[in-house]
Length: 388
Image (tube, rainbow, N blue to C red):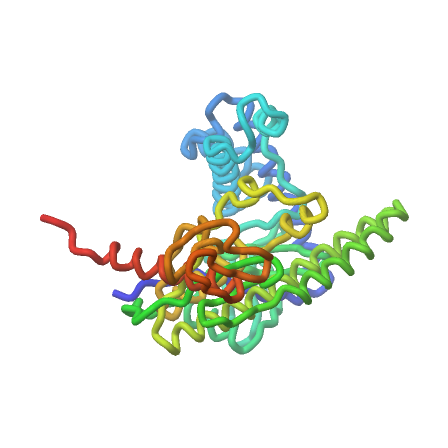
């Protein structure tokens, strides 16, 4: 049995003006309905977490508002999913301790949805005509056919061969998109002959145990330039300045995302070609554990290490490359030759020099080697036969 990887494909809709008006009215109507259901569930103790009770309480009212049967079901499901996520965040402490300002605020009012928040459509509400590149979609004004969309040949091929399940209708900056879920078969995971250790950082976004550096200097310079521009725009204190700031923030995020995609693609390609696995440091919670100087806080808070790790993991999964997360403690201070660990082994940010055996080299490369060695040990332990 071949497992599948869930990926999403985004296509751009090209609706006519009257079609765009119908889509906008539909999105506002369903989000107003979602907010009504959210308030009703919040006011009834425990009701918002129970799908069956929420459906019995709100389904008839939703139908009376003009929503179709499937649209009403998706409205209820969105509310239940939102409260499930809220409860999970509270349970895991993501909103602070009991009594904290952020947690009290989250617990004291119902979850609210934006008027143009994305809405889910299944195959009963949305159908695709790939040859004509059109979709037929349910709206508050009835079924709307022949809504054109555009997609790259590669994305269209993925849609035709692997699209399954639901799609989200998204309005972003005045443009309409459909985000479709595709179940792409994965290649079987191979047995690695060795590992590539990847050390993630700020000055070097990634450094491998093969001494390959992916510098973050250009990204840092780009972000400093953006920060100066944003400060100039913020000083104007106008509504157009606020809109421009949002536009620049999205552009900056897209730029960083593109760089991470390129790095992940290159690392996975090398691992696949050499039949090696990829070892990553476990960096969860590092921002809470590590204290930096005031002038470095902005760089640390914008460090996209989690996104890079996610991109490497999913790209590796699609081609069958094994990925391991290992302990990140002291990887930049540990000598891979003699095992001596000391802060003085790293006299500067860029350099490593073991105080015991004299091994010297770039600190990020040494960290990548340590990550690789820990993956070797972990893989042996994972594949060790268990006693009967």
